[in-house]
Structure formats: C-alpha cells, structure tokens
Image (cartoon, rainbow, N blue to C red; front, side, top):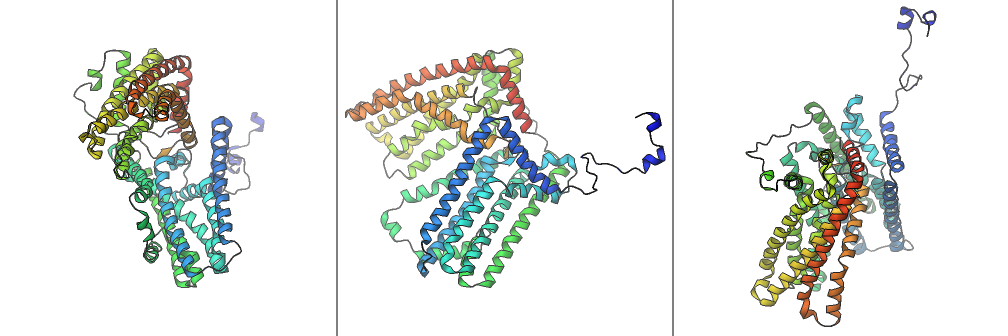
Length: 573
C-alpha cells in the first residue's frame, strides 16, 4: 500500500479488528465443537499419512461392527417373539447385566490406563498455549472421547441389548435406552478421570513406575480370575451355585457407582420410581465428580508444570565399567541401564513368574501344565525388543553419528538379552521345581530340564526374530516420563505389528515342532530328550540369521530409521 493509500493514524485506531481466521461476523467459534472436529481431522490425516493406519482403523471398525451386530442378534434371538419371562429369568438377566457390566466398565478403564493411554494429540498439554478455560478444555476432551469408536460401539451394543427388556413393558425398554446413555457416560468419564489422576498423583518417576507395574499386574490377574475359578472348582460346585446369593450380591452392586446406570431397566420394570430417579441422579453426580477431577488435574498441571527429574549420583560409570571396551559393549551397557529404569518394559521381568504361579494354581497336580509355560515364555518376554529401537528413541542418533555398523548394534543388544534370558530361565526352572515337586523324582527332573532347554531354544529364535523386526516394523511408544500416554498410531500398530513377530517366530520354530510331532506320532515320546539339541541348534541358527539380517537392514535404513524416531519423538511431546 502506498503512502497515499495509508489511512490516517486516528482512522486506523477506529478500524475494526479482523480475526486471523477471516471471520468478520463477530461470533467466537465454538471451542468444544472445534475440538471434536479436530479429533476426526487428525484421525483422517494420520490415515492419509500411513497405510498401516488405514489397515488398523479398518480392522477396528470391523471388530466394532461385529460386536454391535453380535449384541443385536443375541438380543433378538433371546427375546424371540417378546414372550413374558418369569421371575427366575428376570433375576438371572439382572445378575448377568449388572455384574458383567460393572466388571466390563472396570476392565475397560484398566485397559485404557495400561494399553491405550491418553492420546498425545488430544491431550490438555497440546492446548496449553491457546488460553482455553479449563472447564471448556475438559468438556472438549470429554466430548471428543464420547464421539470416538469405542464409545459409539459400546452405546450401540447396549442400545440393541435394550431389546432384552421388551417382555417387561415399555418402561423397561425406555429404561434400557437411558441405561445405555448413562453407562457409556459413566465408563468414559471414569476412564478419563483415572488417566488424569494417574498422571498427576504420581509425579515422580519411581511412583509412575510402581503404578504402571501394579496396574499391569491387576489387569493380568483380573483376566485370569475366571480361568482360575473354573479350573479350581468341580461340576458339583457349579451345580450348587445359589441364585439367591447372586441376587443379593447384585443388590449391593446395583447401589455402587458402576451399577447405578445398569439397574435402571429393572427399576422401571418393577415400577420402583424412587430408586430409578435416585440412580439417575447418582450417575449424573458421579460423572460431574469425574469431570471436576479432570479439571482439577489440568489446573494443577498448568500451575505446577512438569515434575523435575531426580538426579542420580553414580559412584562410577556403572555398567560401562564391566562391559567390553568396544562399540558393542557401550550399546550393551546402555541397553542394560535402560532395561533397569524403563517402566514401559518392566513387566517382562514379572509376567513370566506370574503366569507360572497362575498355571500352578490350575494344574490339578499335572506338572506339565506348568512346564509348558517355558515354551512360549521367551516369545512373550521379547515383544518389547521387537520394537527395541523405538524404545531407544533419539539415543540411537549417537550410533549414526559415530558410524556404528548395524551388525555391532545388533550383537550389542543380543549380548544383554542372552545373559538375561539364561539367568531368568534358570531361576524360573528352580521356582517351577519348587511349585510342582518334580525335583523329587528322576523323571520329573528330566521333564524340567527338557522343557527349560527347549523353551530357551524358542527364546533364542524369538530374540533373532526381534532383532530383525525391530529394524522394519517400528511403532510409536509412550514417553518414558509419561507411560500412561498414547502417541497417535500406537494403539493400532501395537495391535498389529507384534503379530508379525510372533507368527515369524512360530514358523521358525517348526523344525523343533516337527521333531516333537514325529516322536509323539511314532510312540517314541520317551526319547523326548532329542528335542534339546534340536531346539538349541534351531535357536542358534535363527538367532545368528536374525542378527545378521537385522544388521544389514540397519546399515541400509539407518537414516530412515533416525527420521522415523524423530517423528515418534514429536508425537510424545
């Protein structure tokens, strides 16, 4: 604009301000609606960026449609022609819906806390610079979660399940519809509040590590409780189940927070208006309390900021002091220190022992039920290493700067896991001997040695497979300081990529499996000791092959891997 076209100073002061988005209507955009649109825009942007995201979302959509269709078909098949049900059927339906729904809400919250986490793209930290009021920001985050696929799937499934109440009158069906809405609200509000509280109440690294391990143990034990119950009871125990006792238990659960919304159809069917109104009010109050807890967490984080990391005083250089003085030795020392301090991988030390104890409780004196854990224990322990470079993060950049060959990197990591697996298998074998009592007989001792060696051979195969796949199929992981967060793309990739690692390991273990099948089919199972050298040779061969191929791929893709890690690090912010 020329000087002749420039308006005078006084005139410029009186000119109306035009918003940056070009909106001249004077109306402020609806922040909550904008956040909901942003959630879906980010999802579609991620799908355009990565074809794997499309595969993951399509699979998730197919699973959700299957759950909804299954719920609808089951509801229509059970009700048939809307026949009148008797009181006994009413009690059974009430026991199942209220107790199963309560367990489902708790389990969903634990899975959200442990596996899915808080989205790193739709978190309060991402909006900290926009000056959004805390309540408005929390409402936007909550509504974004309510419009997601899990909440929609749960709502439609419960909506179809309201068909189950058709035999108890229109009021019961309408109560089922209201129950579907309130149940999803309670579940989502509780999950969001639990995530916020877990991130804020444990602000030290040690506290977060401890909480992460406790939540993982709780999920695993809770998932195994039905199996433990079934395998520790006889048919006579199940036939003696007292329905009246379960009804009394349901009466108690129905007045607990997660049972309030689930009891509404049954209150409507019995015409208990007082209980119906009370439970609706309590459910709404519970959602309001969860909302207030999330607002408090956002305000507390904004006022206190990020917690300061504790400084560790080392008396020496630690693991670097007793590892080989070489590039692979430095990589081994760094991995050893990382495994000691990383809460995201801490469960690989605990879960195998936990599963041995769980299977011992269900073995009914058959020790082979416990020893078979060794055959797949290594596979489970090395799932984290199949994405090991992503857990290293930007620390891998130093290797690229120093020009470390890929083969040296792979052998440096393999050295640590070989020592770790060998010690762990020996300790687990001693524990299993103590639990099963197989140390008392020569046959039991031989059984334990065979299963331990064969399992160690499978673990070597898993390690070789992990060293190969970690250079190809990487997926985002939560930040070590925020183990309850979930970078965009993590949930989908975490549900798909480990299957490739596990399937490849099973294929590579086929030589050992074929020998075992031949021994069993020819009635020569007494010679099962042959499996020990076969599995060990099988493991050594594929370990060497995985390390060699992984090193070659790392040499070829080093810079691309580094760029991928930078992208993952940006998602963790």
